[in-house]
Amino acid sequence: MSTEPAETRRTTRVRRRTPPDPLHPLDPPDPLHPPRTRAPLNPLSALDPRSLRWKIAALAAAASCAVAVAVGVLVHTTTYDWSLNVGRATALQALMSKATGDGHGDGDVSGSASEDPTGLPPELLRQVAAGKTVTWYDDTKPDEPWMWAAVRDNGRVLAVKMDMGAERRSLQALDRHIVMATLAALAIVIPLAALVAELSNRRLRRVAGTVRRIAGGDLDARIGAGGRTRDEIGEISAAVDSMASALQERLLAEQRFTADVAHELRTPLMGLITSAELLPEGEVTELVRDRVGVLRALVEDLLEISRLDVGAERADHVPVPLGGVVEESVRRTGLPARVEVTGHPMADTDPRRLDRIIANLVANAHRHGQPPVEVSVRGTTIVVRDHGPGFPDTLLAEGPRRFRTGAKERGKGHGLGLTIALGQAQVIGAALDFANAPDGGAVATVRLEAGAHD
Image (tube, rainbow, N blue to C red; front, side, top):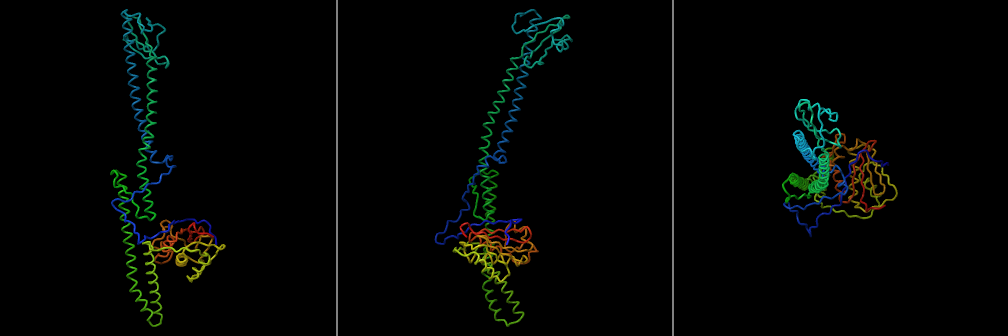
C-alpha cells in the first residue's frame, strides 16, 4: 500500500496525559493569581524588520528626523536672514561713511566706485538706477559671496561691498553641527525606543503564547496580568483570561453532562437489554435487539469519552509485534480490509488501546468511505485508507468533533469514533494525522511515540 504524501493534512500532536494522583493531589489553581507564563524569546525575532520592536523604533526615528528637519530649517533660515540683515546694515553704514567723506580708512570697506564704473555688477546698476540707496547680495559665486550697497548721487554711483564669506562658512558649520546632533540623537533614540518597545513585545508574546496553549488544549493556561498597568495590553490579557475561564467552565459542564447522561442511561439500558433478550424470536425482536445494540454502543462510547475527558485513562506499555496486533484488530472488526505489514516491526505501546484506535479507524473508513479499505504497517507508522470522498475540510482544519460527521456525503453517524481514536492516541502518546490522498480517499495515520522501535 502506498504511503505517498497527502494533498491536505491535519496533524494532531499529543502528549501522554497522566491523571492526578489521588494520594498526592495538586493545589488547585488560584483564579485571582494565576501562574504567569514567560514567553520564549526567539533570538532571530530581534533581527526581523517586521517586528513591532523595529516598527516602533522606525516610528520614533521618523518623528525625531521630522523634528530635527523642522528645527534645522528654522535655525538655518533664521541665521541666514540674520546674517543678511547684519551684512546690509554694515554695508549701508560703510556707504554713508564714504558718501560723507568719513572713514575712508575703515577696514570694513572693501572698495568703492563712481559714475557707472564697468567694475560694478549689472544687476546692482539696474537696481540703483532709480536713485535710491540699495543693497544687493551677490551669491553668483557661492565660495565668494558679497553684500553690495550703492546709491546714485548727482549722476555718479557710489558703491561699497562687504565680504560675506565668513558668514557663509559659519552657516555651513551650523548646518553640519545640526546634522551631527541629529545623527547622535538617532543613535540614542533608536536603541532606546527598541528597548522600551521590548517591554510591550514581551507582554504581547506572553498573550500569544497563552492563547496558543489554550488552543492546544491547556485550559488552565492564564496570562496573569493582575498587577499590570491597565493599558490596552492589560485589557487584552484580562479579556483572554476571562475568555479562557468561561471556555473552561463550559467545556467542564459539557463533560459533566456527557458523563452524567451516560451513567444515567446505563441502568435503564441494562433493563432494556434484558427485556429484549426475553422477547420471542421474530423479525420485530431482531429489529429491537439491533437498535438496543446501537444504543448500548453509543452509551459505551459516551462513557469512554467521559473517562478520556477527565484523564482517568492510563496506558500500560508493553513490547508487542505491531503487525500481529494490527491484523488481529482488523480481524475482530469483522469488516473487509487489506492489511500489509512491512518487515517484523516491534513497538512499546498499549495493545488494548491501539486495538481500539485501529478498530475505530477501520469502522470509520467503512461507515463514511468506500471500499477497498487498506491498512499498512511500516515501522511504527500505521496508515488506514479508504477510497471514498475523503475527510471534510472542517475535520482537516479543526480535527474530529463529537456528534459531528462533517459532510453529508460521508454518511451518517454520531461522530464519536474518530474522537475516541484521538483520545486514546493521546493516552498512549501517539500522533494521529488526518489527510486526503491526492487520488481520492481519506487517510488516517497513526505514528507511535519516538520510544518505539522496530
